[in-house]
Structures are given as C-alpha cells and as structure tokens.
Length: 95
Image 1 (spheres, one colour):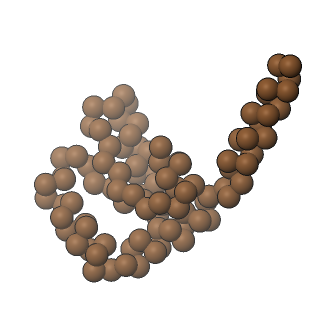
Image 2 (cartoon, helix red, strand yellow; image 1 turned 90 degrees about the horizontal axis):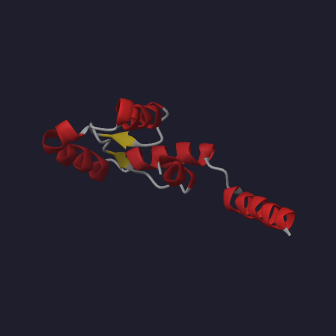
C-alpha cells in the first residue's frame, strides 16, 4: 500500500502495527521516511506526537510539498498502462 500511495503522489503518515511479523511494517515505514516519501509515527507515540505533527504540517505546507516532489521522482506514471499491457499479454497467451 505504501508503494501505491507513493506512486499516486499522495503524502501519508505511516503508523505501523507493532505486532507485524519481524516488525516489517516499521522497517518499511522507516525506509519511506528516510527517503522523504512519507511521515512516520509509531503507535506508541500517537497520543504524544500526532497532534504536533499535524500542527507542523498545517503551519508549514513545505513539509507536504517536499514529500510530493520526492514522490514524483519515484513514481512511474505509466504503471497502470504497463499493468494493463501485461494483463493483455497474459490473456492472449491463454487463448
């Protein structure tokens, strides 16, 4: 889901489940945050930090603008067209 949001240039705040297998959600969220593709708050910090993060975003629109600019560098504008072409090839092979 993170890749899809990034590809669609939709800024997001990751809140990974602490119970995920091998903490993979946190690892993914950290990756996206380090690449400046998203924001991150761990579930244990929601009560203390979410309000302030939203306040910072509201007061400084550049936070979201920077994420969107970075996401655009990573997005594949032809991804859905490419998926459609691959699906058509698969269907044609079966017929």
